[in-house]
Length: 212
Image (cartoon, rainbow, N blue to C red):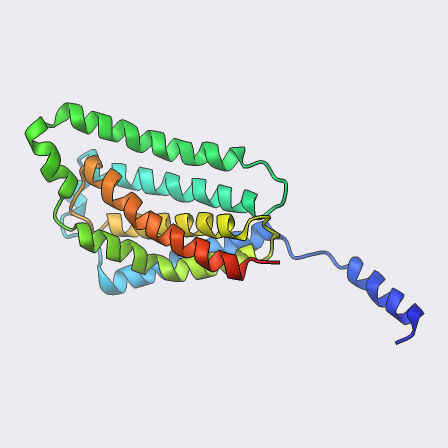
């Protein structure tokens, strides 16, 4: 190729607008919700007494926590995908979810007799919780990582971990509709363990998938 032709080609490429990260991530997040929802419907389903459970505080409280966590992790993942972007919005958004959960735990400790704390914390389906959150999150994690490839994270591992946290929170939101353990003590113990597993998977996958 002649030098002039090469210069013209480079100029054409430079004038082509890059694919935007935010729309890609929004599409990935929407796809993640659909995939997790379909798998949830096919494997677990909503608990039979969900309509009655909605009348109590503990059941809808689980969704408030997991949705806040999903939004916070999504914001953090987007910030991590842009080199030099401030992480403060994502950290603050995640802090809201943590503060919400902490307030629920505090209220539970006050309202529940001390001798019932251990049973509330252990619950009935701890292992199912871990397996379900992890399993439901795998598809969403793949979609979120694919979307984050539109960005240029300075730390692919950190961005992958945030994507895993978001995918895990999406999965936990669906699992919460099946879970019969509504105590904030259970949620504060087992849900974060599931999220941690998915976040670790996301970090490992992001190390490879998001490197540039």
